Length: 94
Image (cartoon, rainbow, N blue to C red; front, top):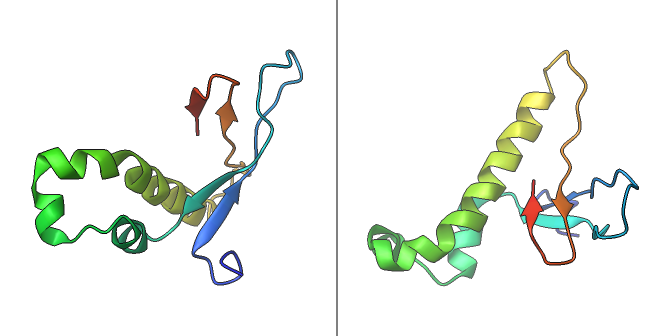
């Protein structure tokens, strides 16, 4: 249901099938940074303090960037896909 109203987006896993160390599960990304910050229980005052905001930066920024890239793909002549890579040690690249 959250995908239907565009609040979350599934990013499929990229797998070259060269090794079995990859995790092939899709990654779920919140597409609205405001909702992501609110779900973390943060407000504007908390985000203004670097020691608190630092923990929220990664996931919120990643969701924003993925959403912007997907939006730009709508008009791009180059057909590309957004994928992510995660190994078994949970090191990942989106």
